[in-house]
Length: 116
Image 1 (cartoon, helix red, strand yellow):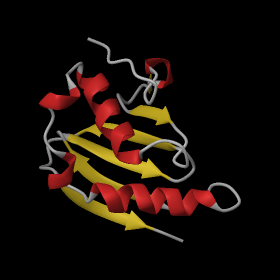
Image 2: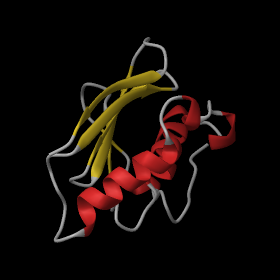
Image 3: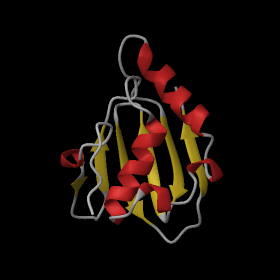
Image 4: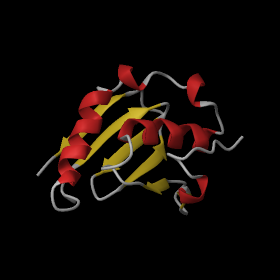
């Protein structure tokens, strides 16, 4: 099952040789949280409603606000990133306009935040 939506076009899903997934997006016009959930769901070939709540891992409002603020005035601030584990994936979100997924056995939770 490949989930299609205006927020998450599956053709943006790329997988490299290390089984990492990288998806580009525009944090100024798209919800970072929705992009994370839909990317993980698509990668797992799952319905987004069957995934754990993102809220249990990271504050969705804060995540969206962080990337909206980092990218809103004069372009993307490439020095801002957040990493956390979600649904057995290490999720790295970058204000340069992309996120990556790496499969992991780590429990869900925050890992690191880097802001300029």
